[in-house]
Amino acid sequence: MKLIVGLGNPGTEYDKTRHNAGFMVVDRLAERHAAGVLPKGKFHALVWECRVGTEKCLLMKPTTYMNRSGLAIGEAARFYKVDTALDLLVVVDDTAVPCGGIRLRAEGGAGGHNGLADIQQKLGGPGYPRLRVGIDQPPPRVVLHDYVLGRFSPEQREALEPAIGRGADAAECFVASGIETAMNRFNEKFSSGSSQGGAWGRQAEPADGGGDPPSGPVKEEPGFEAWKNA
Image (cartoon, rainbow, N blue to C red):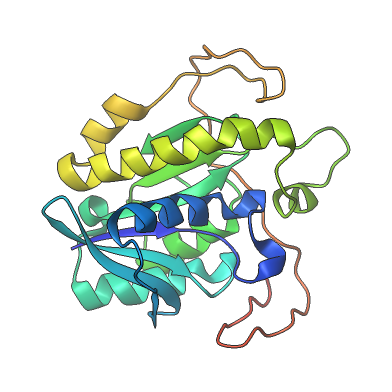
């Protein structure tokens, strides 16, 4: 069993926001491999059980809000007794990657991303593969959590669409051949500029990054557990 988990926030107010790029990749995989199938509520997540090639997979969108993503992943990993270093792929937005870019890593730190930090805490370490989907860095004087909870600009949407497809392709490669093959095939080198003007070709490895909604009281959504103490 392979677990492919896209990170994001549930609810229509967060639909298609930058912080939900992980959800978008999992939605694309569900369109390809579970077309017409409604997701089930399981492990504090919306899940699709499907096959990607010959491999049985669970596609997951946690419904716990970003800062508690580890709850869903930990429950599913324990239930299926998966080796998280080999059988788990977390798909996450990253401000350190230009919009239109994707990047895979076999492991790594949270880099300030509270969703990744919660996963690391629940799994007991950072040793799990992740697929990072670029959303650009916020413009000057724009607060990070406002930026990641905002929607993509028209220019970003144009760059994002093919990246979502490549992200789904990379996840399929991970399922079939493992993280090393997926990294060799799909990792890109890119400039420090954004999709709104940067040139591709940077050699540096971007750090895991991203932001999360501010702490404070949150309305409980029906069927969802809202984050607290983010």
